[in-house]
Amino acid sequence: MDIWKSADSANIVIFSKDRAAQLDLFLRSMKRFFPDWHKYRDIHVLYTYSNEAFGAGYVRTITTHPEFHYAFENKGKFKADTLNLLLKERNFTMFFVDDNIFKNHFSLRSEEVKEFIIREDIACVSLRLCPRINFCYTMNVPMKVPTFTDSRRFIWKWKDAFPGDWSYPMSLDGHLFKTDEILPLLTLLEYSNPNTLEGNLANSPFNIPYMICFDDAKIFNVPANKVQNVNGNRHGNMTAWDINERFIKGGRLSLDKVLNNPLSINNTSCHQDVPLEWE
Image 1 (spheres, rainbow, N blue to C red):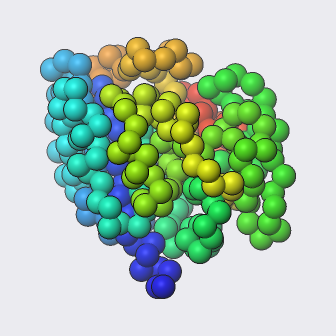
Image 2: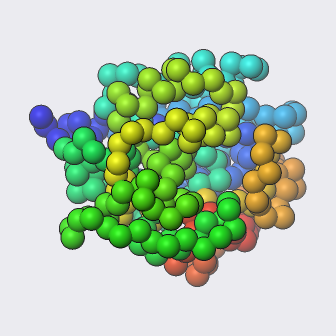
Image 3: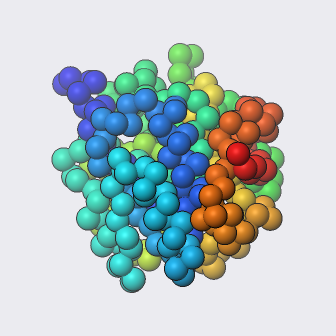
């Protein structure tokens, strides 16, 4: 098998709702830190919005980043719309959400991805975990970093890990899956939005024992706000409405200010409540 040819075949889908400005921020970070992004000519953004003001925000983002493929979510058809974006012949599938941000360089031709390709006992590659992550923001609890089983790579048994992100393989925040393993679950399960999708994946995880991550996180999540009523996720105090209003008037969130914040550089949680500042 040509390992690196295999790594060039991936489905990449970004979910977004009412956060065009944060999506713009994420896409800029992807272009900076994922230099091979242009190889995946049909990176998909599946988006929706609550009203025309939020829709105007997406007009600006789409105009700014025309290189990506944008699919508007049909009402009540989230599952079908998601599946329509996934090609079963592509070896890998990876999801992101619009409040993710790339912070370090990433390549699907990394040694960690190669390890994932050749081993059948690794469930996913996590772009958001690294040995420094010791706090679970969503649960608001400290976490113990697991014992790694390989002296060369950061590989661990996720079922034996401390409750929280280290024992959570089915995240939609930058986990790389093998398509022939994730697609049957995506087809079988019922879900109507990204939150119910991730929740049902978490309730039906792979029976594959290990996960792998990098020596430093490639992405993190900035939970500045909440745009759904499915669950009570913790979040910051910048409303999606206020951000969008400034965005459609010409403002733009600063990528450099986020990346240069010490909380981002040395994040200890997959979700880091870093202030979003404007250019």
